[in-house]
Length: 204
Image (cartoon, rainbow, N blue to C red; front, side, top):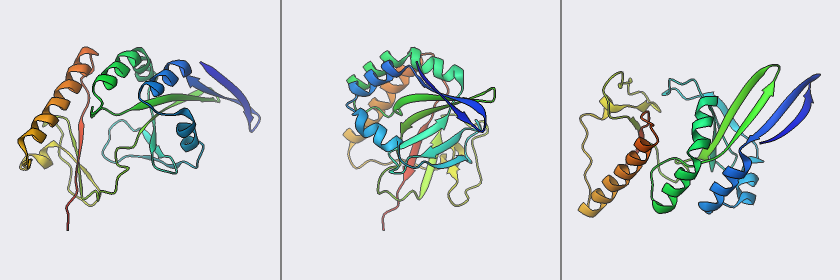
């Protein structure tokens, strides 16, 4: 752990990089250069808002180039992520097309007796696609409907009457295979609360 202390309005603020060596090794394994990563993080952050679809109350920021998202995270989640980091790297090395989010580093800020943790992760929406419809699918129906308003992140019951169709059967098989491998990995890590984000881009 690397910690740096500095003064803010007469009070000590501490910035800590959690498990810097482990995350540096993880980034190296998935071919993310530290110089490129930190160049993005050093830019202006945008956001600092709660996503309307989430119940966690987490805050989100985007890097200026929109490559990465910073999200607030609980200490227990940090502990779990660090503990599984090596297995997580193994999984991504052998499953390069994995649908799992990539977590690149965790940072802590301590000020006035409070701790504030953020995790840096990839921004899966960094594409040219039009986000006409976004679904957060958990595979359950309990409290999984939201009013279909503009820019709302929809849920399982909003998707219940929809059907996915594939131009080729091998595309469907490949997607199912990726989901199966990811779900199996998460099950081995005793993680059950996860979802799939699906984006619908309606072409003109």
